[in-house]
Length: 183
Image (cartoon, rainbow, N blue to C red; front, side, top):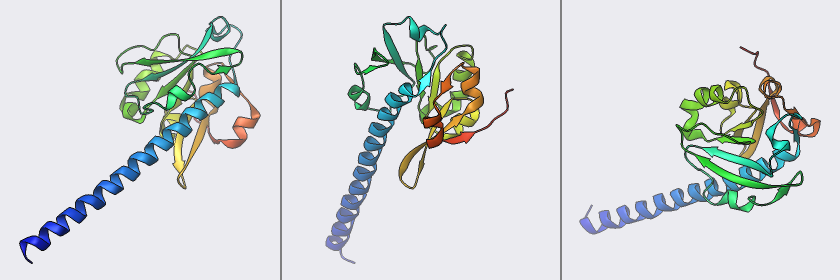
């Protein structure tokens, strides 16, 4: 093959690869917009115990620990009202202890640290949502997963009980139920 033809093939490969990468990035962005809306809706279908800080707080604090995969998707739900309170979005570094959170999102980038994070908040009434189905098996209350190109979620019943959270039957009907015995 001549040099000219090789350059054309290389350029076409670069264009094709960048289109695939762009499509993957667009799909990721859409995935996290959907996940942000799920977080908002989860709050509507979960009841916290009477002694929880959610009842005395002026806001409902949605927190992300570690890398933020949402980009600007959480901006769409911030300051919206749920249960008569505005949503506030907070970010924590992976090594920080998340305080004052009512819902804690643990991204896939933190999956190696999920057990440590969950242990650090074990005696709180936080709704924990992991970015993988495995996180629900590890002890988060809810874990996202992708099935047939759709965002789905699993609920760990024991983790919800341990956190003192009551999950609506309507939400449970939509979820895959994970039953992991308490340790």
